[in-house]
Amino acid sequence: MKSEKISELTTNRLSVYLRCLNTLSAAGIKSISSQALAEQFNLNSAQIRKDLGYFGEFGIRGVGYYIEDLREHITKILGLDRPHRVGIVGAGRLGTALANYNGFSRSNFSVVALFDNDEAKIGRRIGEDKVLIHDVKKMPRLVSDESIDVMVIAVPATAAQKVLNQIMSAGIKAILNFAPASLSARLDVKVKTVDLTTTLESLSYFLARPQAGAVTKHKRKAQSEELSEINEHEL
Image (cartoon, rainbow, N blue to C red; front, side, top):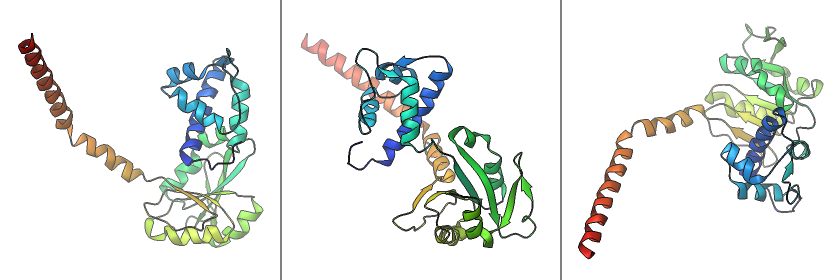
């Protein structure tokens, strides 16, 4: 692996490549070139080669990539060759929905505990795996007892920073935040925020401007007609 710092965009793309390789493996395909991989999944072949090049030489001239070998390499690069135990702070609708999500297990993640400060929720069990809701005050002990290494914040924005501070104090360094808030973390702690509202508002912007496409189309038509007139005049 090269010594230069790997960007988060690169690691995000590695996750996409792994998902594509899993699809190919399930279809019984043994090898594939970067070009064929890019064409099949609407990716960029040069970007694929560049991203993988940070971590070693995986392709074979005339063959491409052996899918099972590359899957194994990317799985190790992403740290998915070992299980990750997840805790969720906030046992509301979002927190319980995440606890019920079956997709985590496909990437070696498992939700092992929920935390809340609502006495009416504490002691209940959620989902098929019967994940127990604990008092948030017990988080430091449970993080150790349950070997939790990833935490999810699913609380209102007003409580998010306080919860993050509690999580960091418990020794967790990988946190997924669903609260619509800008959080401040220590340099040795990684927080990734999923802001659903901002994403939807961005989509709304494009829905609110259907005339933009029509104006562009009209301009292109006008430019085309003008170019035709110029060509006719020159002829």
